[in-house]
Length: 309
Image (cartoon, rainbow, N blue to C red; front, side, top):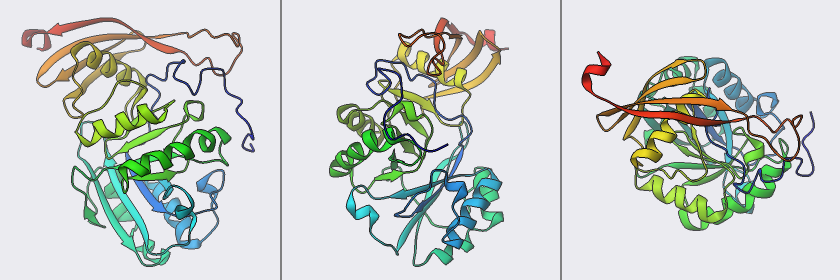
């Protein structure tokens, strides 16, 4: 399907008026980021060249690692490389969270990232392909993938430039991350935190919080790799307790089919959260494809140790 040349999303999709709660992509738990100035095709898995780049994307996809093409914001990002930057990483909830970075002289060096290394990445293990990034060296991705959807370029490209002016060198433009209707979209790695419908102020707040080891609940879509009800339950428990530390909250279990019951650990204190899918009506009418629903919390209960036996 060709990309739209204009915004065909519902009113309020890009302004924060419509909820983007619990909409982070559920399958992305490991990542391969490759610097490539473009042009970017509508779907990167259909890239035919350069051959080493297309082969690396195919190997990553087959291994269950999410590939993304990246470039620096603005005109500088569209200049030819090398050297080019490559990252591999894991954002597996409940598992190790890390990023490795490596500068390559040529695209042919991508062949060193073989099937065995990518299998390790998919399992959450470091392949030792590059240097381990420290906790104060995040990667911040802003989707600007115009060929996938015009809104990503319209809202994402200016945001990427604004963030780069303050947070360079952490900020990269990237290909489709999911959720075009929530552009501008931002992903903070290695934890895989998704934000949507961002303006500059909200995005700067989110990145500044991440550099402190925290998140912000405003415009937070959720964490990649987690089921949507788990994302919703974590969000509601964080809102109730005020816990904003990225690693302070974890989802220990999720049961049910709606309502869902989740057990959430907040720095050693456990809560039971009941969340339920809810229809989100909109002025566009009941047949609108944008009416994908939202989540409501039916109860949050503090659990004592005996309740967990």
